[in-house]
Length: 93
Image (cartoon, rainbow, N blue to C red; front, side):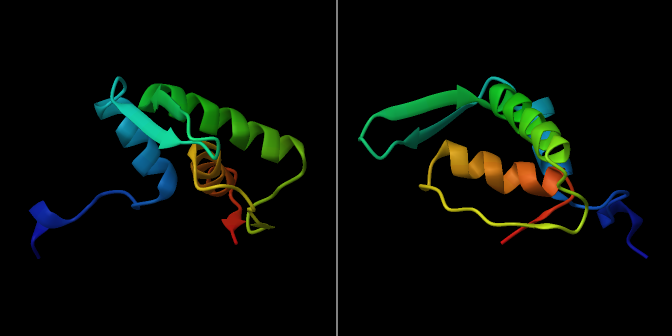
């Protein structure tokens, strides 16, 4: 077996997010808002907001396997939902 090419942990959204926070904490994420203005923050800020959203969803009773629908503009807030819901164990639909 090619041990050097195998991962020793599952490639899940929370792992991807933790990796980005660890490796690129100061890199910027930029999105354009519906009004044409730009929103900019770092992967560290993104990571913290997503973790906070996970806690909020769990506090609202979202459990592992629940489905969470999103209806949002394609911007930083939607990306936070896209990472936050699976972080709380839910499935984004």
